Amino acid sequence: MWLSLLPPWQAPDEPKHFEYVRLLAERPGLLAFADSGAPADPELQRWIIRSMDQQRFWWYGHAPGYDAARPPQSFQDIWVRGMHTATYRSSPAYYLLAAALQPADRLWGLYLARALGLLLAGLAVLLIGLAARELFPEAPLIRYGAPALAALHPMAAFLSAGVNNDALANVLAAFAFFLLARLLARGASPARLALLLLAVAAAILTKRTTAYLLPTLLVLLMALPAARTRRPALGLGLGALSALGLTGLVLGWLRAGGWVGLPQATRFLLSRYFFNEPDQLDRIVRHLGTPGIGRIFLDQLIGMHRGFWGSFGWQVLPLPGLLEALLAVVTAVAALGILRRVLTGGDRPVQRAALVSAAAAVALVIGAALAFFAAYLDQPYAPPPQGRYLFAAWGPVCLLLTAGLAAWLPPSRQWAALKALMAGLLILDGVVLLGLVVPFYYR
Image (cartoon, one colour):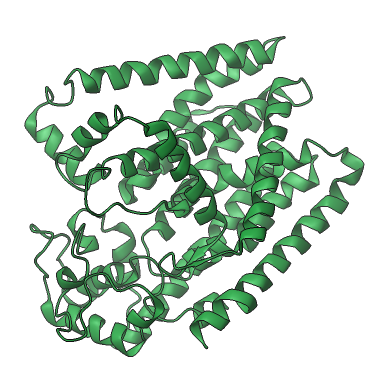
């Protein structure tokens, strides 16, 4: 339904991502630009802009740099700040896959690329369900609730219906999450370890948003022995302190100029892939000392929570305030439930280790998003909070939400709770589609 109801170009950055897809389909061999502002095919950008105009892109409330008296002729005229094209620093992995499916007609190609995203999202749901079954086979609210949440979450469905390289990155991250769950549940073997590392490498090389997977593996190595102790709360507490200490060492290294001391070629390679601008990391480190940074980050977290549950289009269509408040209560109850599970002895050690690792994965994604925002505190254009970054850790998020809710219920009531969860998600989907999206785009 999302694929057919969402008008073209209304998913975040969809014009830029589709441009990359069509460039690879129409001009094989072109992988990246040397200059982020120069279009490789000006005619293609003009065609996309004409289509945006035909589809009333500006009328729906997202018109950066648009002047009706001087219609834009390139993406640089529209996106007056930031990256003008996805090809500047994005891995070609997803785009090569989407380009292979492109027909001659460009508009049909847009919908085929969207269909690919939905197919990959379905595969991610399957992998999340398999991971939940490995870790919590005896808990129906987690085993079946995690994939149900992944499938029926309206914001996830909206993002999957757009053309975006998150589609491939997120399914590879879900594959790594499943392999990690299987390794915990069945034990390590050379084949499982090799496949897990291969999946992590493939995800990171597809998109930088999955780089959290590497430190998550380190957290798991610390969490599993701690979870096996007689006093898991003490062991996990010491592990958390160790992780904070390691984070402090990294920040201290950055503030002391350790980044600048790296070879220039290394810094160029890392900057090109992990940062939008060459000085972005320096700005992040400098702005961490900004007065009131704690309050700024708190506002960003609140915005990310809102964006995670629902901020549609180009973040112009939020959920109603009362619904946002209700979902905030659900999130808080789940978070408290995770603390209860981890700090008590009800779960098996591998389950506690999985929950701690999942929490670390989500915390790392949030930390990276906050760092990204911090880089632009002194810029005239500051990107708004975007909860969509959390879908890079979609498996851990679904596990934490359902396991946290299940912590408050006896096993005998989990089947009823599972039915209530699925009914609630279907109602939420109906409210979003029929109460928000359709009236907004088809009024």
